[in-house]
Length: 346
Image (spheres, rainbow, N blue to C red):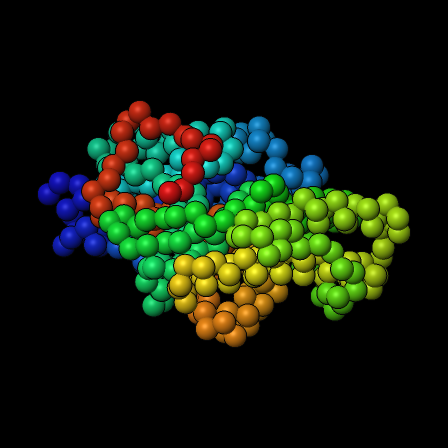
């Protein structure tokens, strides 16, 4: 049998996913686009913590050292040898150019050495595909909100072979996760900022300080630069608080970010006449965002779904799931595949 035909059909193809777009080195094995046989993620958070954000050169070097051993570990966990893999799917963009290059070159080398089909996956498409790994996933069409450290975008996802995407709205400046990181650094909180601020905000009053909601009532685009400036001005005037006052400040900032995301995402469903919304990406792990989206969505007649927490942050299972869809459509990448740090999803 030829590769891609070792199962009863491509429906049951085993895809090796590889993800190195930023500061997680990840590999996963997914069968049939839905069954996760193994998923391994190494986070570089500790490496970048002292800098308050991701340092591209450090990220690339760590990916180089860890990726191949991590792939071996994933194959072992999944009980699959490389010659039984039907397709290799790799994140080719967007992301940090050096980090992407590590994953793409490794995927090309493995594919060439084993004559395995290679599929290039857009990182944002991967986040949207993460929901496919959940039981009874929503069927397109639906609205997808991708919200992470580097990306905040709203898409209409339509059925097709492969799926089709239409950009409905995006941030004009900082991504939501980036806004969390910058505010956290301003307040002396550790990286990653979203996780740190969420922890500090517990018990805080989210209405204590009224911070701006950027571009409210102005289409489906978002903006978080005004919020960042407002927090800086607050700190300059009152200083960095502590105790309950710090909890109030973090809760108020978090609420401003969550309100913006909820308003735009729910408005997008109304604008395109859909009643299903999928939220994904690292910030989708934020409990307040999940709670408010579910409540506001319910009031608006919109069903809101999100992947489990482990599938929100960068991982390779979502890349394998997205790669399976493209493999089913007959897509393959050429041996000349190069990473594209600015690859748009459309």
